[in-house]
Image 1: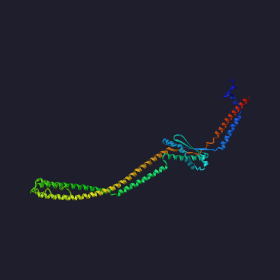
Image 2 (image 1 turned 180 degrees about the vertical axis):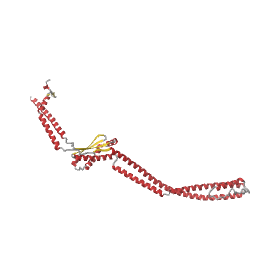
Image 3 (image 1 turned 180 degrees about the horizontal axis):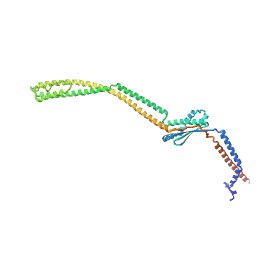
Image 4 (image 1 turned 120 degrees about the horizontal axis):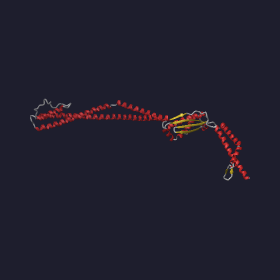
Length: 401
């Protein structure tokens, strides 16, 4: 094959001479080079004198706990950081109040990987970019702390609640101690115990008297059954002696029957009946006194029991108030302690690892890149235009032939 025939066939069956295009481009090389250099010079001038120089400053924030990172990511971490409210506040803190200057600043958030977030600010002034980035980072840090539930306002509020609960506990304990110091509860309890013991003793004495009276009546019936005799039998006399012995065991009782050592064993039935009658009369009189004393003691016990109940109710109520205050204080103190632990954990997990500093190298305009891009793209366009023009010319010439 002849090298002169190198080419390709188009859809119409005509051959396109690629070598001819190469020659065409070679002949037009100065035009292509001139336009490329011109475009590069224009881009150089525009980049150097017309485009504003812009600087970028960035702050790196780290979140070391996966739990916190996941929680913030689920709540749109980027949206939280780039909220209009925080950006506006950072501009105010940086002293940027002019709307045009505010619009010239660019705020961006990038998440490199879990646990690392960059806050970037682009501005024409490098110092302003760094200052705005640092202000923005501080605001973002505080907002993330709030999102995780450990804001300074919540902490202060919980501290106030704990302090108030402690004051209530002190007041409740003081009220209880004061009342116990002034209370007559112990005195009432002591008197109540003494009255109850005295009542038991009175009831026992009354019961013993009743048994003595019952036995005396039984003995009386036995003697009456014997009829009128001058001398009682030995069994009856021994019964009298036993009755007399039981009576002398009672304290505060008058001796009715004579002592067994002087008891006449030759008592007649009439004498014995008279002696028993006097004995039972004295016991019944004593029972009447014991009943009066019993009623008095029962009234005293009821009164003391009422006083004890009132005093005890007040003590129980004050104790309940104190216990509730203790429970509330302990609950809030535990919440505060857990709050401190969680806050310390969050403070350690979220940090501003790298602060922004004014950049010495601008990020735009990139004069070299702009110049190279303008020259190369213009050269490429020039080549395409020249080839198309040559092809069109050649086609028209062929048509005329």
